[in-house]
Length: 64
Image (cartoon, rainbow, N blue to C red; front, side, top):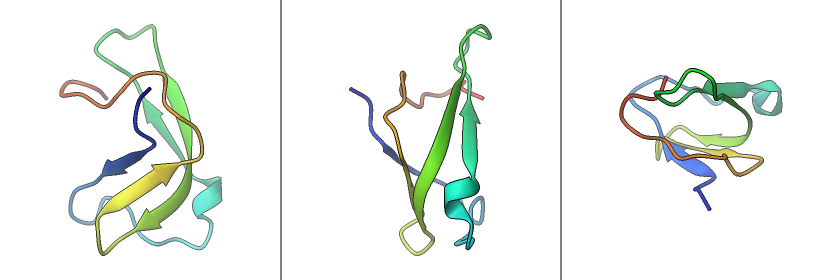
């Protein structure tokens, strides 16, 4: 399975109060697939975030 956590760059995400209301939309190179992934937590010091569910595919270069 794919990882539920990911690393983000600089200030892409913040430690918002409503983190459980935030969803990450991810699409691989092929435009007919999409993941809508709700966030569980954000750690701004470690620059990591965790989804509430497992993605159906992993983050790769070229994903949008």
